[in-house]
Image (cartoon, rainbow, N blue to C red; front, side, top):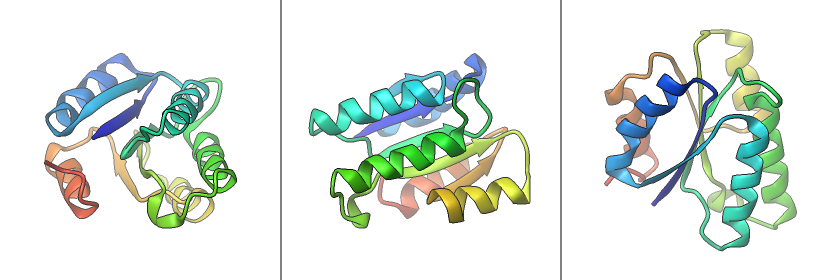
Length: 132
C-alpha cells in the first residue's frame, strides 16, 4: 500500500508519516505541484497511491487546486470512479467553505482538522479498507 503525504509544514509531515507508516509506504511532497508530479509518476508506473493526505493551505499550489488537478488527471486516464485515489484533506482551519469546496468541487473522500488525531485517521483508513 502506498500513501502520499502532501504537507508544507515539517512537523505535520513527520506526524502524518509516523501515523501512516504502519499501514504502508509513505512518500512526501511539500506542495501541490510536487504532489501532481508524484501522483502522475505513480500512475505511469502502474503503482498508484491508495491514499493522498493533502494539506489545504500550501505555497505554489494549494490543496484545493491540487485535488482538482488530480481528479482531472484521473478522468483523462480513463479511471473509473471506483479506482480513484482516496483523498483526505487536512487543514488547520475548520472552515465550512473549505469543507464544501473540498467535497463538492474537488471530490475529496474525507476532511480532518489539525492536529490530526490518530484514532480519526485510522477510522478513515478502515472506512476505505486501507488500514492493515
